[in-house]
Image 1 (cartoon, one colour):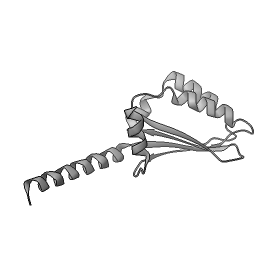
Image 2 (cartoon, one colour; image 1 turned 30 degrees about the vertical axis):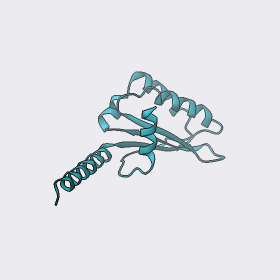
Image 3 (cartoon, one colour; image 1 turned 45 degrees about the vertical axis):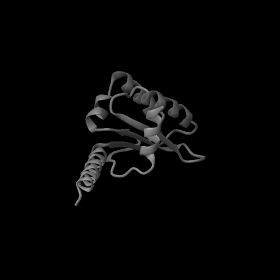
Image 4 (cartoon, one colour; image 1 turned 135 degrees about the vertical axis):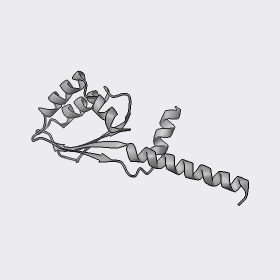
Length: 130
């Protein structure tokens, strides 16, 4: 193998390892629930306020609403569990208590390791470049 080909292969392996490590550690907080009738808009505002308190380790957040209902899914992405847990500040806890009172029943909350992202990385890279 030529020296340049070896270098290219080494760079590919290094890039793939970095990419795999990146995905291996990213965490997703997922909450699925239903709000009391007519309260989704208020809940969305509180969700956005809570997310605005995040900084270090925060990778993005999404709130989905099933059309015509008060059911939704919240997805919050973190670079690792430690950063996710570090954001349990008093201000955040106050917003969560307010938000909790809007649910028709307690949401189903789970934590997942992100194992695949398609398309999102390009969008994040473009946003970071601005």
